Length: 149
Image (cartoon, rainbow, N blue to C red; front, side):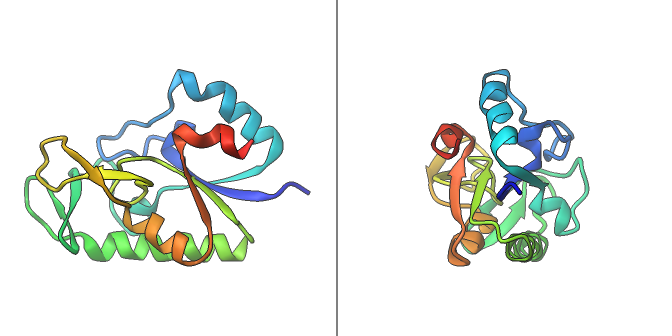
């Protein structure tokens, strides 16, 4: 039986990104294929699991809150709910590893946007990354898949 790991669904081609698209990149294909051969992948989107629709307004972490770009709505509750659900899924499936989408307010591993909606990156982690890390899950970005396979 293969070990189960979590992976951001958008990286596998699921159209769950805020704009209705995905983050499947041609250069990731060989590593994703190798990953699928070695592990059972559990694809998830914390933002959808938290109750947000796709497409949805872009959101960024501003201070301790997650705020949408246009309506300035506080969607922290949905982001935290999605993060909690991801931790529960990880625990139920004995997942020790997650591969998450860099720069996302949910899944950012090393970088997130600064909250200005100006595409400026800062060092930081998304809410799901923080929660999974606190639960003992080792987190990798999509650029680190080769470290997992």
